[in-house]
Amino acid sequence: MKYTTALFDLDGTLLDFASAEKQGFFAAMEKHGIPCDINVYERYSAINDSLWKAFERKEITKEEIGTKRYEILFEEMNITADAQQVGKDYKARLAGMGILYDGALELCERLISKGVKLYAVTNGTAHIQANRMAVSGLDKVFIKTFVSEEIGFRKPDKEYFDYVFENIEEKDKSKILIIGDSPTSDIKGGINAGIDTCYYANKPHPDNNPTYVAGSYEDVEKIILQ
Ligand SMILES: [Mg+2]
Image (cartoon, rainbow, N blue to C red; front, top):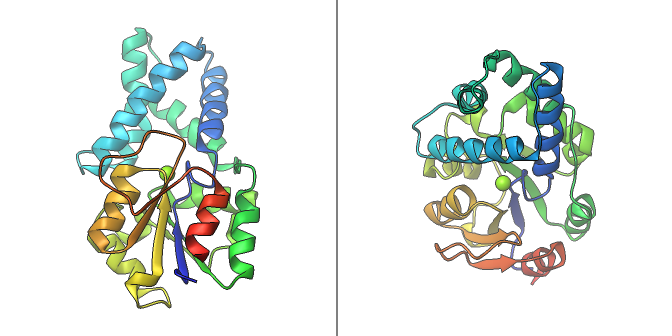
């Protein structure tokens, strides 16, 4: 077994954040009587993506993102609405949704049965992630979840990974693999930290050369257990 320890990103890797996000968005907008359709959602999604990139570059805080994405959206839509409250309602909805991709939990259970130690590494919000993990059952497969908010550093910071390494059993970095769907946080973070990386997504390959590219959970399993 090449890797004894797997660091899993959550959103977009094991948790179907796209579905949860979409449902949460429509529910929050509906609660506030704001008309919206798929085009509005797609615009929101693009704004949100650019703000999370800004977060990775430390130009904005997570707290600010929650309100800012709705402020920008409402401004573009030319409507007056309480962006802060919509943002809060959205987060409340999201916290209750732990939608897993098919086979995600089974993958984790198979890896555990082979003796692989699993940890979650996420830039998400602490209480939301805790809720979603409990709802999805993921809380039972990870030895520990490292939420950036609680550590004070985020992926791809080297300090974030230093903290992780101090708090896991495996001390040999060559036996640790990070699996994630983000070139800018998971892959870049793994490279910064000096561990092997597995890019998991059905998207074009990132340009920063992950050690592996996996298109399915079967691929992920084979890579870890090779
Ligand atoms: Mg992700």
